[in-house]
Each structure stands twice: as structure tokens, then as C-alpha cells.
Image 1 (cartoon, rainbow, N blue to C red):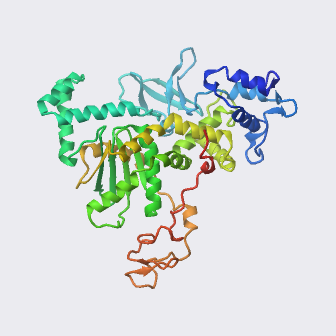
Image 2: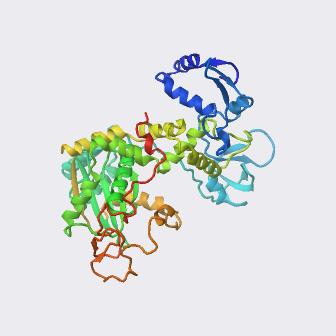
Image 3: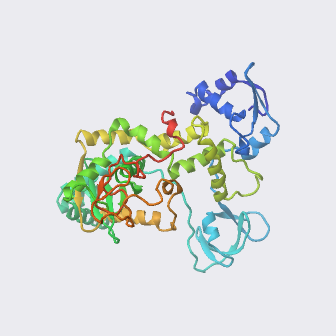
Amino acid sequence: MCALDEWTVEDLLAQLRRAASFADLSPAVLESVLDMLAGRYPSEEFAELRPRLVWDRLTGSLTGRPGAQRLAVTSGGTIPDRGLFGVFLAGDGPGRRVGELDEEMVYESRVGDVFTLGTSAWRIEDITHDQVLVTPAPGQPGRLPFWKGDSQGRPVELGRAVGRFVREITALPDDDARARARVAGLDPWAADNLVAYLREQVESTATVPSDHDIVLERFRDEIGDWQIVIHSPFGSPVHAPWALCIAARMRMRFGVDVQAMHGDDGIVLRLPDLEFEGSEASDVLAEIGDLITLDPDEVTELVTAEVGGSALFASRFRECAGRSLLLPRRDPGRRQALWQQRQRAAQLLEVASRYPEFPIVLEAVRECLQDVFDVPGMVELMRSIGDRSVSLVSIDTPHPSPFARSLLFGYVAQFLYEGDSPWPNAVRRRWPSTPPCSPNSSAPAKARPCATCSTPRSSSRPNASCSPSCPSVPAVTPRTSPISSAASAP
């Protein structure tokens, strides 16, 4: 708009408010965006923060700078760039486009490989910087391609309906349960499998997760660490922020990073072999139950503080920056590699994180809290747990239950392709040259005192029995977030 004509701030605000998505746009939000486009933030640290328009504060007029029109035409758009490779028939002629492939799939492919796309097999003839050239390979067996997409997750309303259906099925005798499943639309074979699956879960945990019950299951994995599975039917939009909050509270309580994975049917947590205050299983489960139960009034603040360190925030920030013309295309006719986009977005985030009012940071937070997460649904769930309308049932099992095995399949898939990573530098710098109560200490093996707070310790782990207030405990300080001071963002 400003690249073609001169606008005043008042006229621009009135024009934008005519669109339904910006009907409630406030002058303060608009001015923050105009500040960014007018060069408020340092372009010497990130070149694309250079001014794109001229804002005359005395007259309130807005005019585009040279190059603004070309930037808007070549780099504008709301569809996120996934960095996909186009698949084309080798040779010339119309109708050459076959489809698209994920860049990781292309990176793992070689000339001569055969893959299936649609209902046909194709042989790779050449791989260029932005295209995969193929020829038909009828009758040849080919591997299936893969793409990485985003799932919306199960809405909390559907989660309640699923939980209510499961509760009804498990309360009926087998014959009546099969009849109820057939009324819901399942054929006899599927109804038999569903009833058998639920009966196996009842035998394992005695209680099936439903709209009235959440099951907390604890067992050891193959290497002896604790796996904690929270069975809940309320869907990923509720479970995703809940997993962030639980991981943060356990990190502060135990002083270690807790690996968490969420899904539509629950949350999987992995804890190292820690020492708990109570030796009985009931005491341990009660302590874990206290950690996963949150105060409803603190949920929004805690989620906002933790979301800045998540992969979701990084991806949403990259997409918001692309829509905001901060990650422009050098050549609109050529593909941009997704991994290179991530690198540029990470550099921009490093600069933007020093300015909590940076509009792209605030928009990424808003997307996470309102479009992806269902924070109001999580608050309502915490209130239901608090007033006992939703019960929290805890159980120790010798091996994973049938429901837990389904969740663990997704957990394994999430961490299967991760490589070894060094200890974070920020944590390493917090330790002294000889960690308090280290195995090389000259103190006796039993009841070694902490070198910082003199608390006796009975374990060689640095934070096993020390007070959380001890300065030597590395994780009592909440994880640094680029949006820590933007907790009140809309």
C-alpha cells in the first residue's frame, strides 16, 4: 500500500480495520509494526531490518522507500515456505510437473532411485538445486516418499466426547459393549478389537482414561530410567502446553532436563533414576501428581514463559518473519532451502530477543498461545482436577500398558534420529572447576556435604539431595526465554 501511494496513519488504520481479521486492530499494535518498518531496530545486526518506508511523525504520512514495491511483490504471501523440491518429467513440453518432495527425502535420494508418487512409480534422472527430474518406471517397486506436516490435534470438545465414549464402553458387559460400538458405526471385527483393547487396558491399569479420569502410569524402561505416562483424552492443544509446564516444574524440582512428548492421547515423560523423598511407590506417585497439577491462575503465565524455548515458537517465528518481509527471497524464481531459512530466522531471533516489544516476537507468541495451544481448555482442565470433577488416578506397572505402548511409539519416533549433543555451554559455565560433591572429592562416600551450602548429600549426583535454593543446583533458575518479559502480550 505505502509502496504505491502516500497514506496517513489514521487512514491506514481505518482501511485495515475493514478486514475482518483486523477489525480489532489497536493503534499501538499498528504503530509497533510501523516502527519496525521505519527502521527502529538495528539493521547493522540483521540487514533485513533496514527501513522499508518513511514515517513522517509530524504529519503522520507514510511513503515507501526505493525497492519496497519489489520486495512486497517478490516476497509477500501468507503461505509458509516449506522448501519443497518440485518433481518434473525429464525433457521439454507442457504438463511436466508431477508433484513435490520434502528436501530431506531428496537429500537421501540418488540418481537412479525409484519412488512412488501418486499411483505411479518414477525413476530419478537428475537432481538440481530446486527440481527433481524423473521418468516413468512402470512396474518397478519404489519406496514411498515422506513429508513433514503439522497436525491440528484433537479439539478438547472431541476429547471429551472420546473420553465419554470410552467410559461408556468399559462400563458395559462384553456383548453390550460390542453392540454399543456397532451402533457408533464400527463393523463386528472392529468392535471386537476395540472391546478387547479396552479390556487389556483395564487389566493393566484398572482404570481407563476418560472424560472423568486421568491415569498417571509409571514404569521403568529398558535402561532403568523412569517413564511416566499421563493418559488423557483431551487432545494435543491441551497436552502440548501442559507438557511444557510439567517439564519446567520437574526441571526446577529435580535439577535435570525432563524429556517430554505429547500426543492426542496423553503425555510421555522420561526421568533419570532419581531419588524421591518417600521410598514407597504411593509417596513417589503422590509427589509426581503434585508436580503435574497446576494452579489454574498461573497456567497462562507459566506457558507464556516456557513457550519461547520450544521448537514450536522457533518455527512460528520463522513463518511470521517470512510473512513480514524480514526473510526476503533473493530470486523469486528459485527455491530456498528450508534449513537455510531456519538459520536466517535464528539469527533474526537472536537480535529480536533483546527487544521484548518486537512485533514479530509478540505475533509468534500470540499464534502459539491462541492458534496452536488451547490454554483456556488447559485452565478448565486444571480447575476440574482441583474440584475433583476429573480424578487423577496413579499406578505403578511392571511394563507399559496397551495405551502406553501406543504413546511410546510416537516418543521413540521423536528421539530416534537425534544424535549425541554436548552439555549446554550455559549449564557447563555454572559449574565450578570441581563440582560440589563430585565423585573425585576427598570427602567420605557417605553424607558428603555440599561445597556451597554445606547440606549433607548421600549420592554422587550433584543435585541429588541438596536444597533447591542451593546456588550449586544448575537448573533452579528457569530456562531463559526470548519472550520472558513479554508475558502480558495479547
